[in-house]
Image (cartoon, rainbow over all chains, first blue to last red; front, side, top):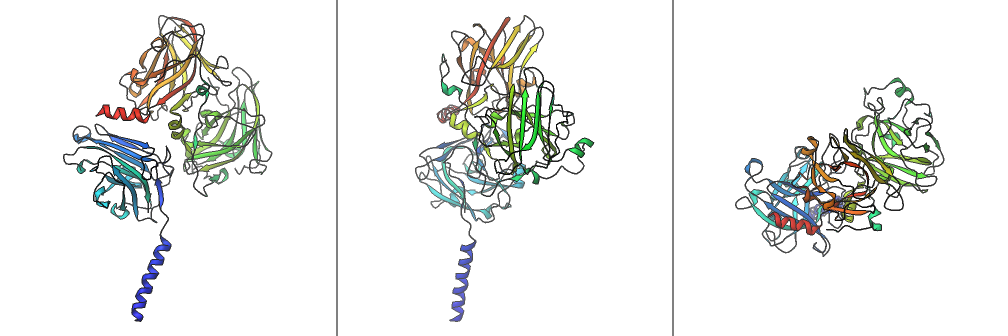
Length: 202
Length: 417
C-alpha cells in the first residue's frame, strides 16, 4: 500500500511541478491588427518566381468571426532557380530587434487552419539564428500530420506542432514560416488558399 | 544646399555634467490632402524602458580620436556651430520631463541666406546593439524646427554629419509646449558607423528663432516605430510634403538636376502652398535647346537598399504653374535606369491634366503601370523632367504613393494566373 501511495504521490508531484513550470501561451499573431505581429515582428510573403504567394488580412474571416490571414499560393514546378519552379510561402518574424526569441518554456507551435476548398497542404518552417543567417528554415511534416482530421478541410482545426520536431536551437528562434513545398503536391505544383489564425507558442 | 557642419567651432562647448539621459483631377485640394498621418508607435515590452545614454557602451577600443575629441568630448556634453549672423546657444537648465533638472536647452536664430547654426550632444558610444533612440522634447512656443543628424568618429573629423530629416518627420504635429517623446529608428541613420557614434546633431535649417528643450535620451534594443501600419490605414505613403526639409519623408535625398546650358533650381516656399502651414516645392527652370534639367527625389538609399514599390499602384501629387501652361514629363527609375542616369517617362503632364498646368492647384494621379515594365521591387527615383524649351516655374505639393487595396491585389492575383 505504501508503495502505491508513493507512486500516486510522485505522480501528483510531477503533475504539480509540470503545472507550475508550464508557461502561459505566447500569442505570436491573431491578425487582428494590420502591420506587425504581436511580438513586433514583420509578417509577409516570400516568393521566388515563377511561384507566387499573396497574404491578406481578412476581417470577419478569422476563427471566431474576427480577422484572420488568407494566404494564397501558386507553387510552380518548372522554371525559376534550378528549374524547380521557385518557391513561395509566408513568414512571420519571431526575433525582435537584435534579439532572438527564447522558446524554451514552450512545447509546440500552435495555429488554427482551414482551407478555402479543403485538401490544401503546407509545412511549417522554423529558423533559429543559424538558419536565419543562411536564409532558410527547418521544416515540419505535412500539416495534416498535426491536424485532428489528418488533413486541411474547410472547417477550422487546431494544429499543434511539437518544437522538438524541428531540431533547432529553441532558445534562439528567428522566424516561423508557412511553406508550400513542391514535395507536398503530386507533380510538384499546387495552387490554393489557406486561412490562418491565432498563431502561438504553447 | 546645406552648409557644411563646422565642428571646429567648439566655442560653445559647455563643460557641464553628463546628462543621464482611381481618381480624377480635382480643382482644389480637400483638407484631407493636407493631412499626413503619424507613424504608429509600437508598445515596448513590459519593463523595457531602454537604457539612459549614460549606460550605452563606450566606443570600441582603438577608436581614433583627435586630441580635442578625446579631451573635451565627454558623453553628454553639448556644443554647437554657427556662421554669422545665425546664432545658437546650448546649455543644461530647467527640469526635464521627469522633473530632474537635466534638460538640454537649445536656442537658435537662423537668418535667411547661406549662414547656418546648429548644436549637438556628444554620444561617444557604441549604439550598434540598439534599434531605437528616444528622447523627449518641448518648445517655448511650439513650432520650433530642426533637422536630426549624426556624426560618427570619422564624419565628425570631416565635419559631415548625416541628416535624416526634420523633427516633423517624427512628430507630424511638430514640437509643442508639452513634452513629447520622439522615437527614431537608428536604422534611419544610414551611413554613420553606429558602433562609433560621436554626436547627435540638431541643425537649425528653418529660418527664424526659437528655444526648445531635449531630455532623457534613451536607447532601446527593440523597434518602437511601425511605419507600415499608418500606410495601410491611410492607403498611401507620403514621400514628401516639402514643408520642413530638403530631405524627403523617406529620409532620402532630393535635388534639382541640370546639364548646361539648361538649368533648374528649387526652393521650398511658404506661398503658394496647400494647407494652413508648411511649404511647397518651387522649381524654377530655363530649358534650352541643348542640355537638360529637372528635379528628382530618391526612394533608395545611395549605395544602399532599393525601394520596394510593389505594394503601390499609383503616384500622386499636386501641381500649379507660375503662369500656367508649363509642361514637364514625369519619370521613374528602377535600379537599372538609375545606374544609367535616366528614367522611364509616363508621358507629359498634359496626359493627366486635360487643361494642362494652370495657376490653380490640381491633383495628378499616375498609375504606375503607365511607366511600363520596371523592376518594382528595386526602385530608385521619381523625376520631373523639363523637356520643353523655355523659362518658367512650377510648384509641387504632397507627393504620395497610393497603396494597392486588397481588391487590387486579388484582381492582380487572378490576372496573374
